[in-house]
Image 1 (cartoon, one colour):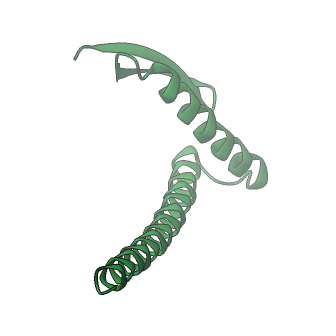
Image 2 (cartoon, rainbow, N blue to C red):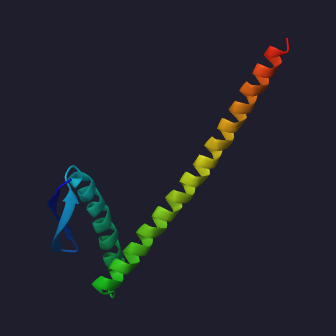
Image 3 (cartoon, one colour):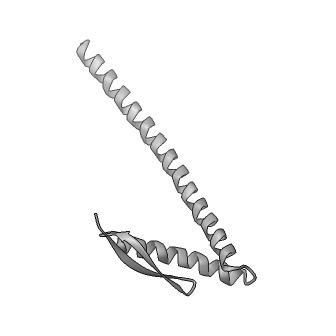
Length: 100
């Protein structure tokens, strides 16, 4: 699969990022979210360097990702439990039916 170059701007600097064809819009959406995080941190903390702002944004984004993964694990556990219950209910119903 070939790549295309996507121009994104973060804190006033433009970067050319290699991106798989067909994923350009997704990269732009992610870049907008990162820019929003960076801008929020920059406005909130005027004394931080660009590097410190980037580190703080990375930590915030990483924390959000961690929380979403935890939610996903919890959801998957709930689905596994429901599937097991349904399977058990069906098996019991089949056993009852076959003994009649």
